[in-house]
Each structure stands twice: as structure tokens, then as C-alpha cells.
Image (tube, rainbow, N blue to C red; front, side):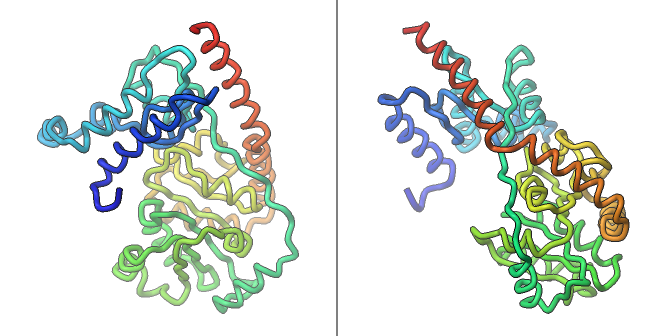
Length: 324
């Protein structure tokens, strides 16, 4: 229902989803914060980890016990992860699995199945040339890309600071820039000197042309349970620079210097600038990173991910049949 606070909308949706899936299905595979799924996939930091495990000011923690919003999220999640026959809680990364164990007990087992990706097909370069032409960028320019629903939290301040220290032929393309992001960028101290080298594109469902137009993908995120965008960038043949774990769960699947450049800290703009420059100027290093990234893409191919879920479904169905 529109007009309600987000936590009430989440609660309403969870109740309605449970009613709609109670009968008539062999397996319900859910990605929502609710309690309808036989297979529940956790994509974000668990609510209990945020509110009961992470360090927090005592007054804030005490107030959370009286907050209907926090209590709703905690109760929904508790029902979602409660163990029962024919039920599995899947984490999209080792980081999420570890947070779940800290929140709900080390003895619990949470299978880790990451998201999948499809290898991008070859393209003649026309969309790359057309998009660069729209931005008045040439083929000699080195384009750094960031795709995010909230670019500021995904490390945009660090990317802006890095761009400031790079030569003028380095450009920045940000896809997913809301009005709030534009205001934040305009207020950034680094932006004044590089405004002509930055393009901000609103949210779009068609991100393929932007991946194809770029040379490097930068993802110095401050909070990503997995990190789908850098995996997508790899599928388009882009070398990637990412934050380390625990800021980016995807980093656990990468070897620094082989599959990607994994930063020491997401706010180290100098390190990011050095990585961008090396990936642009050192052909051997770039080739090695791209070869490693291709292996990462193959390991995350949808057919491999699907087989993992098929195996999980088989175990869930077997347990269900035993309890009938």
C-alpha cells in the first residue's frame, strides 16, 4: 500500500506473499524479507547482525527495542531463517554467511551460492563510438565507469578524488545518478576542477551501452554484501578495481593482481588512481587481469549457479517428503 512507512509495506508484502504461496507449490524460492520461502536467499547484511552484533551506541541499541520498525525487521528475519525440515537459507557471499552465523549461532550452516552472470556477446563497437561521441569523448580518452543505484555509497567520492589526480584524458561516467547524487557531486571539493570530465547518467534499465563504452570499472564501495556491478563489468571485458572485504563481499571471490585490483581501503583515492593508471598504461598487467576476470565470469556462469540450486532443491524436496 502506498503512503505507508517502508517497514509497514514490507510487513504487508510478507503477509500477502505467505498467503499467496501457502499451497500449490513444491518449492518457494524467495529473495524477500518474509517467511514464505523454502529457499531463502539473503542478499544484504542481516538485520540482527546490524542491530544486535555490530558495535553501536548504547542509547541507540536501547531505543531499537522500542522501535516498531526495527522490531518488525528483526521478527520477519527471525521467521525467515528459523530452521525447519525442507528449508534452506542461502547467502550470496561468504561475508553474508559469516554475518548470519554471528547473528544466529555458529553451529548453523548457510550454503553460499553467489549471483550468476552471462558472458556478454561481441559487438562491433558502434554503441561505444556513438556514446562516446554524445559525451564528446574520443577513443584516446580513458573512461572509468561506476554503475550503482546509490553511487555515493558505492565509492563515488573516492573516484572523484582519484580522477582529480589523473591526467585530463581520464574521464568518469556514473550511471544511476539521482538528483541527490548530482547535488552531492556538485558540492564535492574535488568536482570543481574536473567537472568537464564527468558525466552523470540517471538510472536506466539498459546499462549495456555504458559497460561497452568504458575502459575500466571502479567500485570502491563502502557497503556491498556481494557486488553485482563489478561482476557484470567483468562479463563485458572490463578490468575491475574493487574494495576489499568486508566492504565488498565480491572481493572474497577475487585474487588481487590476478582477477582484479583489490584495494587496501575503499577511501584510498591515491591507490585507486594508481590502479586506474596502471590498468590503462601497463598492457601486460591489464591483459593478466582480464584473463583472470574471464575465469571469474566462467565460475559465475548461470548454468553453474543453476546446477547448485537444482542440487539444493533436490535436498529440500527429499526432506519435505520425509516429513509428510
